[in-house]
Length: 410
Image (tube, rainbow, N blue to C red; front, side, top):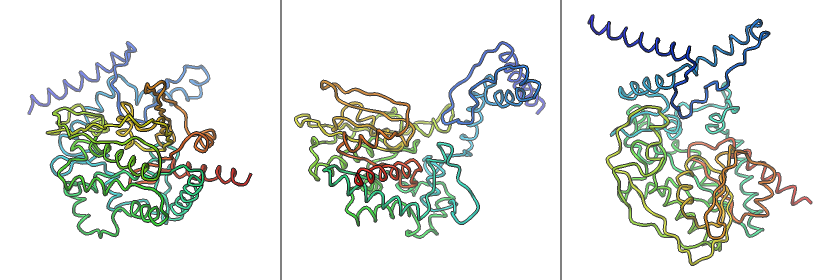
């Protein structure tokens, strides 16, 4: 016991001494943390009046608290300990070591949700707040009415809207959920699960709005023995995303949109991760080590290039669309796609002299984008997860509807 105490004190003193020495030498040894939005990145400037008022000391304390040398390495070390002992924060271990995003699991079961009748206020100033926003019934109905209006307008202009609701791992692999959620699921009626997804799909189908319920597609693939989510990931793998690309292409083709035919190759397996979504939970957990899945799965998208690519698409999406974008970076059925990640930034992929080009713009949605949807794009893609209707999507649809109304009133 005495040896353990000496060892612990020695390690502690070594860490403190190292931090102090590096700080005095102004050497900032750090590693990247994913999603750590609380870091104060700008060091306060030393000014005489700021020191006298005490503002400099206060601001520097906040800065130092998230920027002292080795800080991020220590955070990862603590996260690693928590992960190894089964105690994590935003992601939880389920049966067979499946990893689940805590928030999405709760929403699948409608458990511990924000209640619009209580006094809790949602913070929509941060990106996380806008992504995880919980719309009330009135907002959802107004949103759906706006979708219907936009769809009708685009139909009159010979354009298409396609609505894609991407899946939640907890709903696809609910048998492997963490034990406390499996208990809740047993006492939760089917009518009370995935209410948002069911409400949206019902409305879209009743109003003949082109849509894809990716949850149904993933469950069908699962029944055939195909793995559509990695064990150590919370987003779908390439088996899932490629299936939805295929379905989206076929549905648009069936409406008269001239797109090339697609085929899906046989599934390939690998011992190593094949794309970012295979290990995204590791990145979100900010740990050093997570044991790999036994196998990773991938398949290629085969596009018939004999059909000319002349269709332009505009998309407002979530992180689930990134796996689709990975395919489009190599080859895509569209001539051009402009894809917004929520309303934060956009990626443009387009063909120029038969070469696939890309461009990233660090700007959100502007008035020009609404005009371009009318003038330059043939297809509008709306994608979000089955668990949340992001604030960015609500605002985008409302603004687009208002813009189209102004055009009709001219």
